[in-house]
Amino acid sequence: MAAPFTASEIEAGRQLFAGDWHFLWATATVESLPKMAGLEIAFAGRSNVGKSSLINALTGRNALARTSHTPGRTQELIFFEKDAALRLVDMPGHGYAQAAKDKIRAWNALIDAYLKGRANLARVYVLADARHGLKETARPMLDLLGTAAVSHQIVLTKADALKKSELAARIAATEAEIARRPAAFPDVLATSARDGSGIPELRAAIARLVKERR
Image 1 (cartoon, helix red, strand yellow):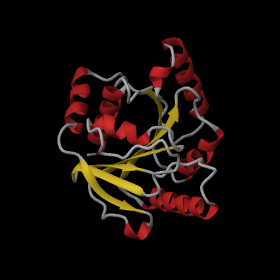
Image 2 (cartoon, one colour):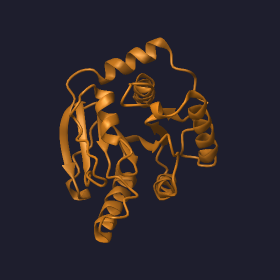
Image 3 (spheres, helix red, strand yellow):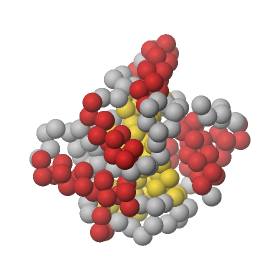
Image 4 (tube, helix red, strand yellow):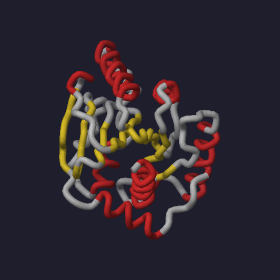
């Protein structure tokens, strides 16, 4: 288990995400990826799990990442940055069965190529709805991350929808579920973009990671 975040790490996380975050790039093909610079942190998860809302909460920008109630809206790798030191990447949502099969294959090929070929990718945060935990549709993504040996960590979203005891049980169950995955970070984080809970801790986790990778 990782050490608890200190007050200085919470502040470092706040500073890391303060300032003018902006859209940088969007691509549906690996050939059009932006040139690697600094570190990249990516966010993955099933459609409508709240990736865009979480990115907006982290950066304090209400409309940096486009949110939608329509599953499968994010169809590209979308890059955001404040400066060249750190970029955030919103990945296409997986598990949206109603998308056309050729589109799903294209998304999967793009994600596979990105994960295996991006040397500056520091970690992928895999989002799961706290009300449901990891669903079967998350398994292929977790397997892919494991095969590619990409560091990843589970982040539970919409944590405000659960009682404190229910959330603690969900975190424990999720940590037990990923314990046998070597590339998975053992600690599970719980967040809510709606009430802001867990956002300072996720910022601090990213700040700690950035510091370790420098």
